[in-house]
Length: 331
Image (cartoon, rainbow, N blue to C red):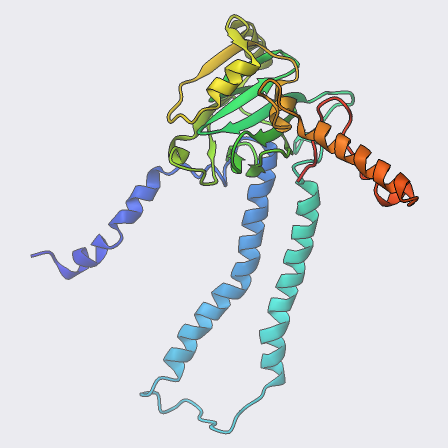
């Protein structure tokens, strides 16, 4: 027979499994994620200022006004207390105001579109530093990363140097998805025909997990990749090795865009010029019309119709993308 105390302890045994957990969200390696973790901690502590006293008072009232406690004061006609009203409503109101202020500040400070102003809490971004550009395409069910400045591309592998600002331009080739590297920054959605951005920086050398955090079909659970934070010298060496790979053409992308599960890592030493813009504007296939070109044609027709009706041109003149492939709109 198991002693009663030991039986009660068995209910706590599953908590031992948490001992090996890596709480990466609260202990990240990138500055943006670290600021987000700080916001989570501060918000939680502020809310506990209300939750903890309430839970304590519930237990206190239940014990003090139990049926067997005949010494407790009994006031059947009591219905109001100004002090209690101020405490019950005033304290939560102050917490909500402080939380709202902090949320407003961090919403603008950690805007994923906002260029970085610092590398970490002790180092600002030096003047004239240009962020590394990485173009991200969410596919079924894999991730493609294009490095336009280096002229290379990879599938299911992301490599960036540490302490260097990185600007991700993201879209999807099929359905809406979500790009998430917990150690680097928060989750940002990707959508077909639209572009989103993320500015972030990694501060520690290491290998981190990246994955899709939005259900997108049968292969969603295996839509993962490894993110390598490396030194600048290691990054330069990796780029040179990657350039020895094959070419990524429009036809090659179309073949790669077919749904696959647990797709292996791939490297491409060259990429067709403007491939990301073609993916963004939904015109990778030869002979297809790009969305931005279609919008320009529609705008010209609207202008012609407005002129025919002698209407002011600014009534029917939308802002359109340039003749070269450009992002349509950003969310």
